[in-house]
Image (cartoon, rainbow, N blue to C red; front, side, top):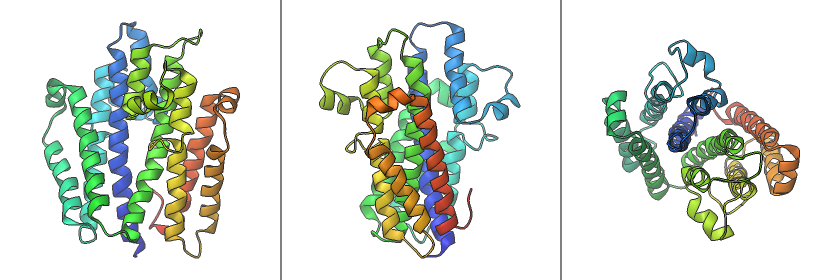
Amino acid sequence: MLSRTADHLYWMARFTERAENLARLLDVTHQMSLVPQSVTAANQNWGAILALNSLQDAFAKSYDQVTAENVLRFMVADPDNPSSITSCLRAARENAHAVRGTLTAETWESCNFTWIELRDQKFEQILSGGIGEFFEWVKLRSALTRGVTFGTMLQDEALHFIRLGGLIERADNTARILDVKYHVLRTDEGTTDFYQWGALLRSLSAFEVYRKVYRDAITPARVAELLMLRPDMPRSLHACATGIIRVLKSITNGQSAETERRAGMLHAHVHFTRIDDVLAQGLHEYLADFMDRIYDLGDGISRDFLVAAI
């Protein structure tokens, strides 16, 4: 496969997954903002989203104050923000268009229709229609595109690069969502608020899974364990790392040995870790290290297989 084709497929998947995960992060923050709290506390939660995505400076160029509406506008529909949901879905469509002949008709039509349906919507329309409903729409469109992709495409290198892009992005974003929300929700006394923890789990499609696995009260340690270390939880760090190794083995080439080694180290890092060790070390420190490893792995993939790192 041409490296340019692989590059477009990889980034099509990454941008689609990024839009979905951003919708999940904004959705859980929005749900938590409905709980009675001070204006300062609420704005700090919205500001944490900007900090986690390193967008404070870009936000400050266009907005004077960190408020729910300003952050939502910036992260949902601002054309000057390359990380907004609108920008991500546009980029996903552009990458898909570049390799339209490699995709099945269903995959292309799903990606293209998502952009067509979104492009003419102004932020005010999205807000008036219900921001929660919009986030659900983004998640459903991403799931539909992913479903028709894996349900219709030949299981060859093209699908492997799509799968790889989605896994890298999902691992990074699961770590980001957990990092930004865990310490906000955990109180000094170690008590939990069922509604807010439930909102966090639902944002990662993990609420029903949690109840099935643990069958009792929601605790911070178990939420972290489920989203990080469970190999059978689709969005966990462990599941993503396992998937990355499998895909890299399918597309290995003469220069990818080092990238495969680092992917193996990342997998071992989560496979042999216990949640007690993570919490003793510090959850933020562990997740920051994981995100650094994912970023490094992404660089290796770009260097070994794609046109250039982005």
